[in-house]
Length: 436
Image 1 (cartoon, rainbow, N blue to C red):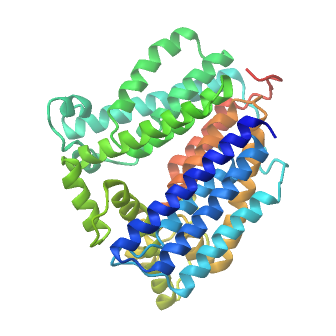
Image 2 (image 1 turned 90 degrees about the vertical axis):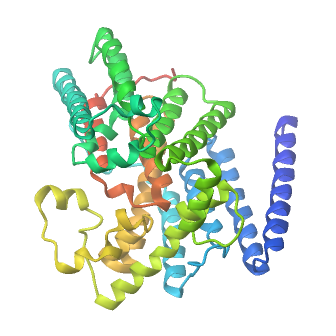
Image 3 (image 1 turned 45 degrees about the vertical axis):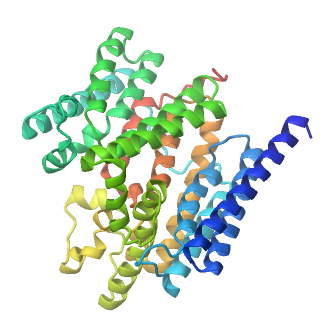
């Protein structure tokens, strides 16, 4: 065991002790139940240990275990009764335990066989597919700008902070292609490297895509940009802890900044708004308020989904987990499908609700095992560093896990289009056979 490793372990252990002490005394001073505080701290330390061991064993900072630990940290934070909505029913507790265990089992199965086989398309087909997606993105952006009557970035620079509200009113199905702009940026870089598009095309298209990204004030695009950007750097260069920290810090800063733009408010006013959303009577910091209103409350909402499902004896039999196919082929929607609690993407009841609505506890087990298997498979392919296709595939999967405390991103049209398009554009049957 090297001296550097020992020092790092000692430093990490010290940080954990300090963090545990800070959390305990902070929330104990507020009068929060001590058993909830101790449970949260204990589980936090356990998940941190599992994540740390996975990083050391797999030699990758981002792996199927460590990335899921972020979802678990947010879940554990919700065990603190800081909200008036705080409630974990027996059914919800069982549902969460099954979800976590099933995902971890899926990862530990260590499946290495390819699940779906895609054909390899010609360079010409890949080039035209890229051009089609690029122009769909740009035309969709122009259409949305026409609807709201101004360019969002220019409006913000001139002091109009009502951009997000106006843009939200203009969103149509075409907005999916606008949200793809960060992925198109990296497809442009990767296809240029493979010779599918010319260097001149890359130089012309990149500034346009950057402009579209800068005008998209949704934090979904921001998260995709940061995640895929970090994996792109890691694949072709060397991703140090410093670069990861800078990327995470930049995301958090821009996340809060965009939140202020959306509300047109100061930090203090935004904090009060978030406290009201989270229904908290405590003087939480802006960071705690974000955690409470953007994750904890969403876990509590699953109770409402469970109650409505049991009350109506409802089962959607795959319609929720396969929403893109249902929308594409116009699947039948019954009266019960329109119940507000069942609109999981609007209701924001985490990624767990959809499989539960489809097939109950069995759906949660099967889908989470599947997600775990896919996570491990994509990670193994990416770790080889011989196929750029998995920069996007693994990155999008990580994106879906990080969005898991909000809604189920796995079953969105955006993710499905990106995954299929990525196979068409980047699958070429050629391996690099070296780390570059």
